[in-house]
Amino acid sequence: KAGVTQTPRYLIKTRGQQVTLSCSPISGHRSVSWYQQTPGQGLQFLFEYFSETQRNKGNFPGRFSGRQFSNSRSEMNVSTLELGDSALYLCASTYDGGRNQPQHFGDGTRLSIL
Amino acid sequence: GDSVTQMEGPVTLSEEAFLTINCTYTATGYPSLFWYVQYPGEGLQLLLKATKADDKGSNKGFEATYRKETTSFHLEKGSVQVSDSAVYFCALCTSGTYKYIFGTGTRLKVLA
Image (tube, rainbow over all chains, first blue to last red):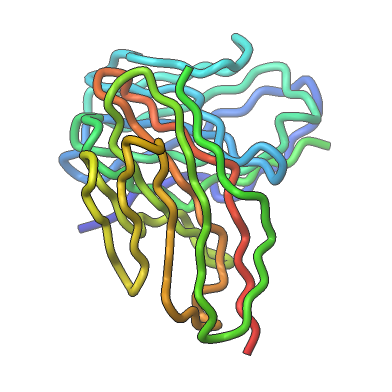
């Protein structure tokens, strides 16, 4: 069974640009969550999607947005990039987001802002 | 809001030493609790979990017990190996929130 796949693995952008990251969950998983991982802050929750609906979001500015498609694949978009957006962005999936289900993580997209 | 607090690292131990990594939480509902591990150069993976009070999760010699009275989920291992060197994250998820809250992680370094 294929794991969670994130593309691309690495991205280098400059301030002011925008970026789109992609996540394909494990087959059969319908809940997809996104996190920002930085050395000082650990994992910060961005948002969660299920059946193309955002059910929860974290405390990030509106520049961070996401969506989910009918096949459960998800994309995350960051507009007007800032230096502080440099981080590892992780995607995780579960069957339906229930509290007993452990999240399965992808390897992440490392975003560097110059 | 819900939160997870882990002991600050790094933790440096000699091989075969006893390991404890403290984790405490606050939650408005009844959470499930998890420990995840991130080995160097690898992604996050589940180490163990517990879904109700007094449950003990265990895997690869690691154990953690869900203590509702002390709101804790401390990770323990009786004899660590060099291969256990990694970053360990404590996390919780409360029913109906669809949101996992992670601690800041504790880096463990085991010396031969």
